[in-house]
Length: 579
Image (cartoon, rainbow, N blue to C red; front, side):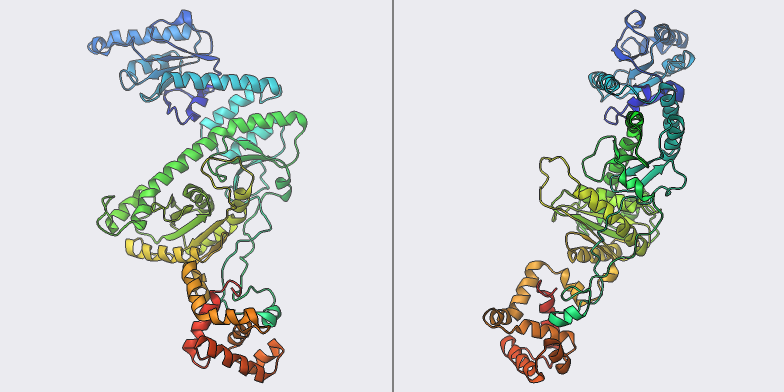
């Protein structure tokens, strides 16, 4: 363990009061808590010193700067003589760390970290020793680990803000490892050591599945007509999306086992993976595990930042999803929305594209994380948050300052990786349904940043996602047909409408060998052509005339009237047998 590892423990909220990158890379052998002004005799080399600064007397020293500097100097001298690794000063007694102590630590080359008042010393001590014990066990199991000199260099790079690609390049060069890439669990490339591989942000893992993207007018096709139409589905035509865009890491990367980087996270989309481009030698496998551990703080920081962004986005989503007036939750006006957008880093004067995502049978947080993962593909600011109304579990809403086509394309490219991550085996969690799930997303039209316009666009996205199955991606342009419009109608309403108009035909077909429903579907699909319908159904034209008259008798509708044809077509589109 090194001192800088304490900064990656987000729950402790420890911050640097004064330290250099070299000091943060110092090895830690233990931790001692003391409030003595001269604790040297009780310290061991390499230990951290944890103090509540009880020995510091601000009332007595405030009037005498020289005495204050001497008191701080004596304490720092004691730590230096005992070869302490660093000082952790608690802020619970005096508030901020005294400036005199920071100056003394600077003079004596002692890194100084501040422990906030809400963090207990017991928690700090426990975390340090748990980390040290874990390292001892790890070193016993894997003698070959990252050499200390290389580890220090990599930690220095990490603390200086180096990118994942820079860290991987240095590690591969210094450790003699095969080229490696750092990925999210959904396949987004975060960094790579291979200059011939993709740039950060592209997708690596692909599946043969494609997002079920709705498109086309959705005309009725059954029987021979459907078979002659080629790749068609009932009353609608499913258009496959364009091929995934962008360059990618070579295919053999996906065939080498990856190592988990950091904790797996709450959702299946949180994880990071370190994947070598070729199978490592046995001796290099342990080194790769050490490298994955060294990269873990990057993953923890990214997860913490994403969680904070979702919390900030909750206000924007609440403004869009909540009531227009009379709510105590904030200023529900264009001015209030502009302020909320600005606080989240979104432009208040640029067009925004609304997005709705759904992960069926899972918490809304899953949908929010998945949607944010997809929008990372776009070089544009965005905000995502779980839906606040809770009317349907597993839904999230987002806004992105990018054109609708770009947002839709990012979702289409991300869908295979998100679907793979969602279906990967996971340890059972309390409160998480075991039902099969899927990821669906719908994009609304790009709109001006006003409450009314964004709400209208969001309503269209809601309608579109309601028309999707468990899996799929759709843009607002798919809402261009009667079939697409009806798919957004609640299932209970569709069933009632279908039964009211087609119930007599269903009853007829159950006791007769001739299907009037199929005849109706073919007749409507062929625009009411008697002769073409007869050819498709392989019957005489007079038989078609007879069947149509029988349909009109049972339904009370005339197929000679356009309005009645539209009613029956809508009823067929509500029938899962034909749609």
